[in-house]
Image (cartoon, rainbow, N blue to C red; front, side):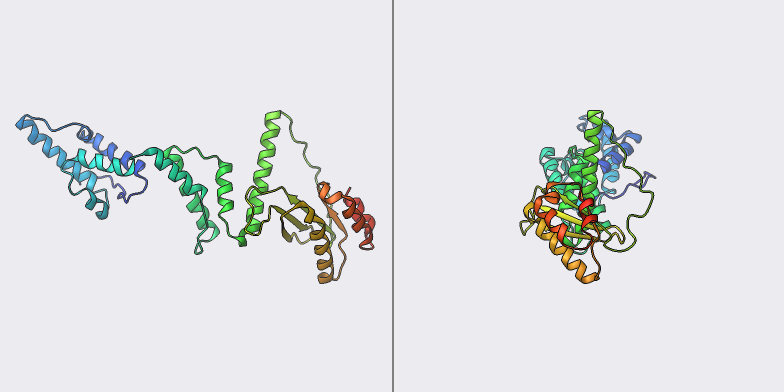
Length: 293
């Protein structure tokens, strides 16, 4: 190929970007009209056209892998090759957009992948889909990434879900023109040992149930160690039993008492059953009761 520019060989992927490079080269050599025009009938002009067409075919085929060149061996002109490639890789664009969207929405982490490899593959699929014209919002993409994670990445999924939740809240604030009041800075340590303070939160129902039927996620975070405990619930009604079991088990394991619980004051944390239990469970009843207010 006479062209000094090295074009990555087309292997069936990223046709749009490869096509742009090839057309740019052909335009620079004034050969791009061969992709659309027909051979001239005049014998003298035909000989000149045939020479240019051979040059265009060389530029195109030298930038393709051998396996793809084998598919266009029956094409006689550069125009034939171009039409064949278009039909194969840009045939029904609507169907290709649907497939690209499905590839993103049905993401599943492979067994041999780590988190970075999985995310890189997901971002590549998103890029390809958007290049085709698929409209995929960032939140939709993040939801697909989370859904495709195996169970061992539950904490990563929870963090991503939390970030999405905060992002949504901020957008609503902006739309309503109501700025969020900043939280007061913490000027002193809130805990000096494990179990001094446990932050509890119940994540609202997830759209798709787990295999075991869970729809809610309860997180319990030890303020001192920052250790996170995660429980999966099928109903909010299970919240009390889960928290009671957690307190009893963790106090027995650590041989110290839970001093305070802190929540967002949701009804699942401030109902009569929960309040009554916290009053009688340990010597720290006042601190626990006050932290629930």
